[in-house]
Length: 397
Image (tube, rainbow, N blue to C red):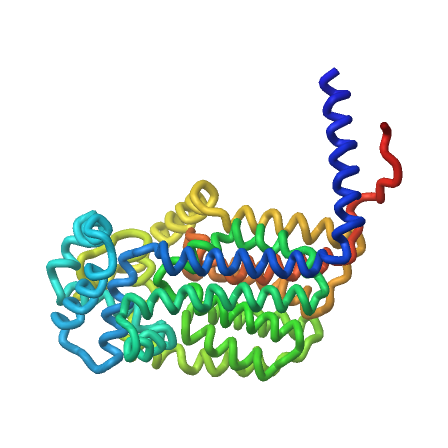
């Protein structure tokens, strides 16, 4: 009895689906366009009216103020904390200043706070753009603009991507991808993730379209916004010739970025790879002055295990990769055609994620967001002409 009811529900569901397809099929691209733009506007509005306030914003505010010529640690400290206090609720401010011993020390000790800025100054483009915007708006608003506006533009680029692939009817899949990749958080947090993701996604879109000048320019901007993307650029540069592709934009971007990396991180006062690794994963010391932990292979391996476990139980990026890998396999089995550029991006993305995990493992999905998006968008484009189910011609009464 139950099986018969379920079968009847399935039959009517398929009938309704076929009826909608016949009547709305010609409008599918328009509907997909409207849905994706509406979703993007919703996320942008949430980012503006309901931002996520985190401690990193304090350091970015100080770095932005420093870029305008202020060097006194006490003045930088006062500006950063004053800007945050003026724009968030008392409860949120208490969390950022009294939630744990580390935050208490940073709030009460400008000198200790100043030692942390080396982690943030190296996002040169983000800091300089923030400094430019503070000519017209306050620092807190500048950080919101640098997340919300790039977030909206990411939606525009993805809409253009689907249009170029003649796959706007698959926009709901792109929306689902953005949802599980935590796009909403990216656009709401005051960090360089949204800005760097915009440049990176644009660069890969240009790579697929063989616009090498854009590839070069956008990859350089990606690197300047977040230097850790250099790993992906290097992997893409290696994979491309293996796929018999010539991409002078990728090669030039890698070597220019590599040449800039050491002087840029040195000028920004970055404490170095192992110190950063140890601070992030082992111990949040109250000040980096005199902090120089010895390298430990055992500590490094323990961190690797911890990051994978946290990724499995707390975040979504591994799930997206697993589902994406399965989708890639199924698309190939069903005869989907991938260009060399598309295959190159898929392979480079998987290898770059593996490389970054080895060099500096991070469990938060936001660090992998742009890689998940380009991986997923290539697969969505390939779904355009694939038939997953045989057409249903008749239904039982």
